[in-house]
Length: 462
Picture (cartoon, one colour):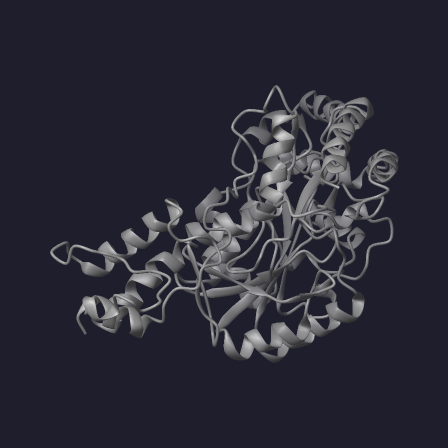
């Protein structure tokens, strides 16, 4: 059908492409990406049906499908069965939260960091290790057969987080992000789809984009992934698995109920879905809820680390892997890392088995509670989701300001926070909210200074 017959036809996108540029689907994909970057197509825009666009451009339907798929794999588009294809709300957001250098002029309330009270005890433990006569073994390659007792330490840590497992399921990774990357690289192919919450951990988004794995938002109820919606996605969205943060969900600071954990686990078994359970924050809770892995150990890859409860520099994660996934994930970790640092593995294991471990965890918890009491005082008149033991909160904004606008405004006043737009997935509409890190400021005084600035901004909006 010739283009001029569409002159007065309502279409959200009417691209103009040079058909001499081959292959045409890449030229069309390039135009679509450029129009998104230039703001011609705004986040949330529903694109014309592919058949309609093919008629408009006088192209084969397969050419349109290929172009859309290229942009989908880049995270620019989000398609769902029965709803159509939309420009992703997160198409233009920056999901890389850790800046190359710490901004000197900003109070850091963006990055999720624990306080630094455990740094000195870790230093003392490290000095003690380096005075031992065979210290040189920690500077060579680590061998899996030499780490049995370290796996016992991993079992202790994981048990403390609410899950019982055995040493034959344990693998080591260089931090939780590394474990997520290895899991997706080993269990997914480019174009595969996994389900996530509407707002999710940005590190998952960046890894998925790098591996061309599509992430599909699954509806939530009261900030919990809906088991009913998960089952619907299993039947209709062609997903292979899901990614969850059941405790202190990042960024919404919510918890998944035990009942929903059981239902999610049962559905994963029924439809043979893998589940990545990110347990980065489990240790913050004095009495952790049972892990999702407790109810489906044969389907759940459980990732535990100390970066959020002791020190971010301890780049070590323990991964409890079901037998059916152990070989591919183990190979992926080898190809990514060869091995983890023997020095960090030993330091972490000694810290866990020492009497000091519970003291350090409790010290962090007490500090976090004190800081959250200050947050509650400043934000008493606003909705700030989270509990007293969480190291970040989810601040819902008054008025009509977006999270991205508030993030910019806060930075102009000297405080770094992160907007919902950085966490949103696909065509989900971002909440008007920002994530606020409670423990990132160096001192209580710096925290109060940041909170005063944020409260003043909030008051100006009401």
